[in-house]
Amino acid sequence: MEKLTIVKVGGKIVEETDSLSQLLQDFKSISGPKILVHGGGRSATAMAAKLGIETQMVDGRRITDKPMLEVVTMVYGGLVNKNIVAGLQSKGCNACGFTGADLSLITSAKRPVKEVDYGYVGDVVDVNTSELRILIGEGVTPVIAPLTHDGKGQLLNTNADTMATELAIDLAKFYAVNLVFCFEKDGVLANPDDDKSVIRDLDRDLYLQYKSEGVISEGMIPKLDNAFRALNSGVNMVLITNAKNLTKPSASGTLMRR
Amino acid sequence: MEKLTIVKVGGKIVEETDSLSQLLQDFKSISGPKILVHGGGRSATAMAAKLGIETQMVDGRRITDKPMLEVVTMVYGGLVNKNIVAGLQSKGCNACGFTGADLSLITSAKRPVKEVDYGYVGDVVDVNTSELRILIGEGVTPVIAPLTHDGKGQLLNTNADTMATELAIDLAKFYAVNLVFCFEKDGVLANPDDDKSVIRDLDRDLYLQYKSEGVISEGMIPKLDNAFRALNSGVNMVLITNAKNLTKPSASGTLMRR
Image (cartoon, rainbow over all chains, first blue to last red; front, top):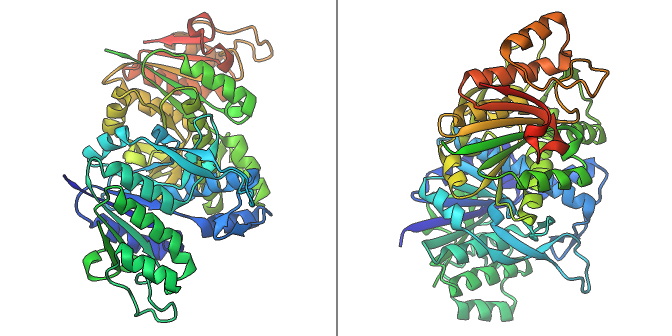
């Protein structure tokens, strides 16, 4: 099967002009078909503040009431997505922006209210990549914003890591998928206070051991759970690395293989 | 050649939930391949006001400084576009949103400063529909926001009527294109004070006569200039009509034929 690289970038990297330009240059140099999935939470929080809308987070997840849904639709689907697309196009990469609503790429269900009412947050229920794969075959690079729809006209806010994972799982039926989570650290750390303590190779047993011992920091757990779910579902390889190491993925970061 | 309908809708129609839902229902019922090009100026003006950004218009065109470019990128590319896409998807229409930057659909050049500095406004220089046509062939309905890019990473604000016209001209090489401009009036009026005075058939000679006699209102002239340019460049038919007559186009509005 042909290789396909899915890169998820979040945080400051995509939201600051200089680091974004470097990231897009590095991303562009990845050979073969590729997809970029982005976040934009800091920009959404900043725009919400300008509009007098308070940002509330629970366990790192955004409470998305109606006004906040408008903000994330504007910021993720418009501001961040279109600037990335224009940036990639300027580098000769034929990018095309999508949300989960476009081509009905990702359908989700509004999260049921339990202890927390997350509002307009969607949990993925279906992935459809049939038209996306045609575009990829034409040399197009999809750039995907973390929004989905419920199929009944409602847009929903969906976590970008989860979207990257679900896309990777679906596309693993058609490609040898490498899933790369980029962030500001060099990888998964054995000691959160020591940036050099990157765990280079992580398998499921070691992960479960580290998790039970409390070695792995709280914030990494959803990312790693996503990673092992992807590997269990046919994804070839997951790498968690620093965005600045995107051009030399095998030389850095935390690698998880099937 | 296969028929392709390009509908441009602007104004209040796409920006109010009830009228948008009706419009999407009517649009969906158009047979064969179709494209929706939308505006969003009222929402952009409202969002700008919420952000304390003043809207300045010259001859009906928006002055687009850097903060205003952010607003239109968010509102046109995000809020309006993605809500239309989700709405069409809910009606079983496989919609996909685009700006001119996506797939490098429409490249433009920043308008030179003459008497007026329009800021980040782009005049169309190139149209590329090669990937778009593949998607149309797959049954996809493009939904296009009035933003373009300069190919060097800069997004630009471009008039939606102009974008619809340029797309129509390019696609006329491959399809029998009908271009429909929807707005709040029933058509081009011979007497602006009489909504019943719709000019049903308009040819170039009659248009030039009406224009010189001052019969046709100032605001209609750019739309009609676009219309006749489209007809001169291979577009089959242009209709200017009320959005509520979208399902019965031949029974209403102002019709211009090649």
